Length: 351
Ligand code: KG4
Ligand code: ZN
Image 1 (spheres, rainbow, N blue to C red):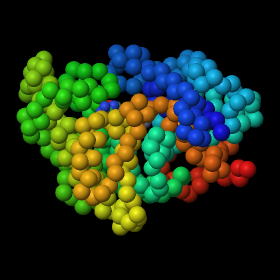
Image 2 (image 1 turned 180 degrees about the horizontal axis):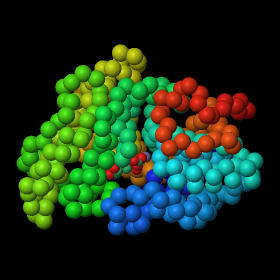
Image 3 (image 1 turned 90 degrees about the horizontal axis):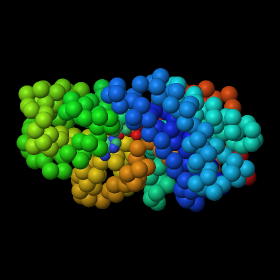
Image 4 (image 1 turned 60 degrees about the vertical axis):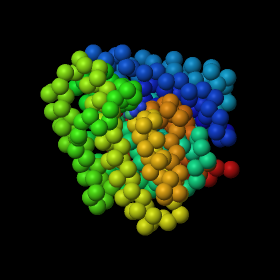
């Protein structure tokens, strides 16, 4: 089985060809970084136009690199949301066009579901597992029961973790995305140089809150010299250390909640762009040892948005007969736990 996956929900135009037996035949990602750079963040209108300008070429490139044609495909998957509506429309219309022209199954995929399932493309992760989904727009814990079956445990009350990192990096005078820049700068810093708050640490539940940390970061930055490389390194190391502690505390609570529902959970999957951070991964892996819990995250380039994660979610859905229909409407908001209620996909039997 060969599936083409398209991703256009934020600022990456991406296409990838993935097989049922977990081979990534191509994975083309075109970043709009330069288009958005002058504005210090993603501008939705610019993103939509850029997707429109790039999508044909990216799809062609993905097929060429995979040495397949549209006739070799068994289905086409596309991020149908959540995300910036202009971009999602571009991807969905492209996918519908191909599906219609080639009479292929059309598989709209929830972008968050794709992040949730990517670890199964690159590692042998079995259901159920606990998922920490940390990206630029989302920050939440879920139990992944099965493909299309997610139980929400808790999430951020305000900002997503990626957003907090991006905004802080901006205050330090850097571009977007900020997460990888902070990770790089932290490598040579002292993590106890600055004391920062750890909102909700020790409290019941597994919610997050990052707005207070962001405000505290702004205050420290305004009181220091951002042109000093020592300050930059020490501050970023302290910030990462603080966030690492928050993540461990929240994961401890989430694990307890998850085990109360599913005592058989043995894996914590960390997904989404922030999962690319090797410091956080290291901290969580160390913490997890005492629980006999395995921490799994996809390889760095599959943590941030890409087409392979959409194509793989397409494979997983296709196998279960969870296809979509051509009247699917793009969904700028699309909570993951809604998938369980059937929503806008239809179930078909695949022979
Ligand atoms: O999943 P993603 O590519 O897009 C969304 O769905 O939001 O996540 C992007 C986020 C950005 O906030 C970016 O700063 C963060 O992931 N990120 C990282 C790293 N690489 C990307 N955060 C921390 N460390 C990284 N290495
Ligand atoms: Zn994402």
